[in-house]
Amino acid sequence: MYDPVPMHVIATMHSAFPAKFGIPRQSGLVEALRSTIVFEPPYRNPDALRGLEGFSHLWLIWSFSQARRKEWSPTVRPPRLGGNTRMGVFATRSPFRPNPIGLSSVKLEEIQQHPDLGPVLHVSGADLLDGTPIFDIKPYLPYTDAHPEAAQGFTAAYHDYHLTVDFPPPLLERVPLEQREALTGVLAQDPRPSYQADPKRVYGMAFGGLNVRFTVADGVLTVQAVEALS
View 1 (cartoon, rainbow, N blue to C red):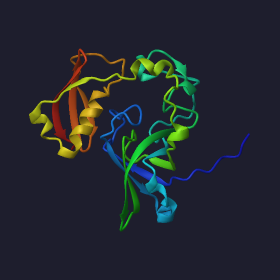
View 2: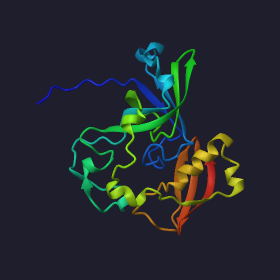
View 3: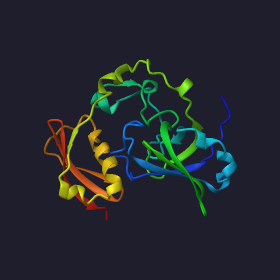
């Protein structure tokens, strides 16, 4: 048996998602999503980021902070397969793993030097819950990390899956202008579990301080209400 490996939270993600429902299932699916990464005090030394500005994309290694279980299962039910078909946990990106660790590729938009928080990373395309602890950040290297010819396994059928979004203009106007593209992109990815297909069911999704209520029928997601979160 190996001795426990110490892990230190180096930073925290700040995103528009206060709850898990609605978060894109993979990073990069909604490029318009903007998030910030704030380092913990011991890691706010600008020297630790020296040279990072030369990279366009980053790898984030983080913790599924709301998906921890005492026991692990060798098989899980991927949502895109309807929630009934089991696959090996190591053939999926399920949060329910022996170690609740996530891996995401995001685009680095800006490094801001904040007077109180030190260097703050502004990124796009993240799939992380607000408050997610981050263990490490590494540069994405296209010459070795990108494999366009890679096989997609059972996920190939869902590569281009999306819904048509019907967002009535009066409701869209309740969304801050800078969040509209991101929110519409998130809705197009179909936030519902695949096993829920009741066209009359009204779903609620928290996003950027708003509660967005919608229905889905025949491949069209229709926004029914946009309200401020209480």
